[in-house]
Image (cartoon, rainbow, N blue to C red; front, side):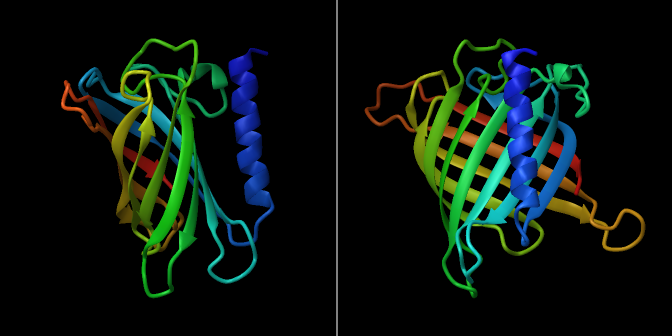
Length: 216
């Protein structure tokens, strides 16, 4: 088995173990497609699948919550199958630890770190994964989606650490509340890495990704 498949199996196993070990766990599995736009990105539609697990790290009220998100994608025109890891051509993994502020506020303070096997929109694999880390605020306890906004250091723009504003979110455009598809939804997904030209030497690099997915 290749190193890539071993890494994928380990990540999926970690997500499954995290979900099984918690009482107040949230699990979302989505499939759809998206496009990347920006300084160096291609605008071709890319199939993708997302597994997202949220779990409290302790049992007390207002305990921090860990969000584990795994995005898998294929090259434009190719299909993705969760049953066949060989169909995946790119992996993006992020860990986000959030501390709720108050019951009356849908606002959490978060720190995030992640890695990706490719630059967004780039069909060429990389010898070394690109990484990022950021401090964020997260709006996500109102049931119809979530939004994070923050600042950090990011390699996803060109392979080097750059200061960047990071925005990501999901919005449930439709949610089935009854019937056999209860809990299913159609979601608008998006994220942006906006480079900060600290010294005014330019050009500034940006990457914006927008997609649609279905799942629960």
